[in-house]
Length: 93
Image 1: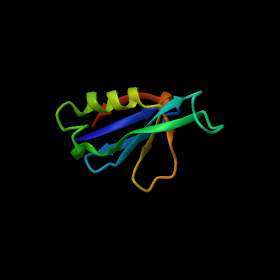
Image 2: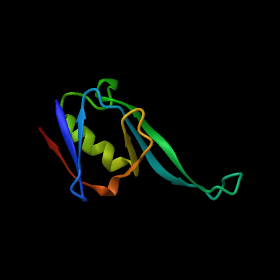
Image 3: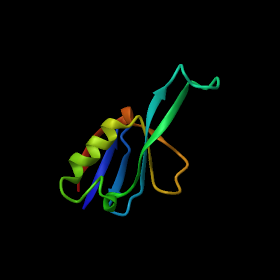
Image 4: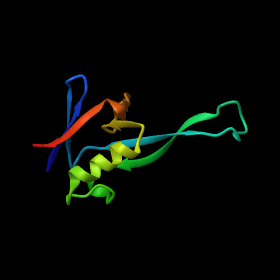
């Protein structure tokens, strides 16, 4: 299994069953106890083997994760996040 996340800038990110993903969703709360009303909630950490993204229909599951998230990080040691609106398509190798 291998997928490519194709970005609007022409770059492509290769995803395999070993790829670690972290996804965040934007949240806002006027009820926050401090002045920081805007934050991200982590909605997923893991890879294809973690059950949320499985080998069956992995392209559809990855599309769903990218659609639900506002930001994703690809790779466990990656310090850069990707805004999901930068994703143009997901294709299978």
